[in-house]
Length: 186
Image (cartoon, rainbow, N blue to C red; front, side, top):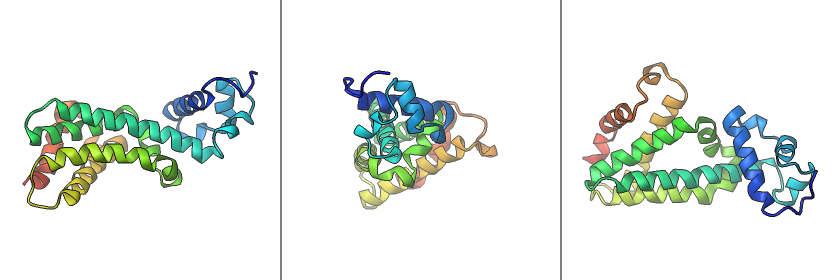
């Protein structure tokens, strides 16, 4: 085993924990397994994270950062504000489908402390898109409604609900979200 003085061990621990979460689920990301994956002592992670939940919060934060980037990139592709919102919503659901175990962890109340700031970036990206729509309702309510619709849709798909079990193509997701977000767009 190498010493805990390794350069950027905290980032390595987050990557190892994320790999375990994505491949086997959150329970697999124990301090012991993460330390073993990084080839450090079991005590070494505690120099960077006070406890397992703090490490998982950092994993969730990495997911939120990626989600914010995905939403921003999707929203930039279209000129029409309504299309920008649908593209961002589609990217949200696609991210959840590509990273179902990580996505669940990102919204786990048990690790929320470590991820709160990271979630703000994704929320802010969605807020910019919704604000550009000039809706007849306050932007903060429209943002919450749009997020709730996209998140609920993502959770139904990630959870394998029978009505959503098939048709996970971008086109199908966008068509479904288009119907759901119609009320927000009016």
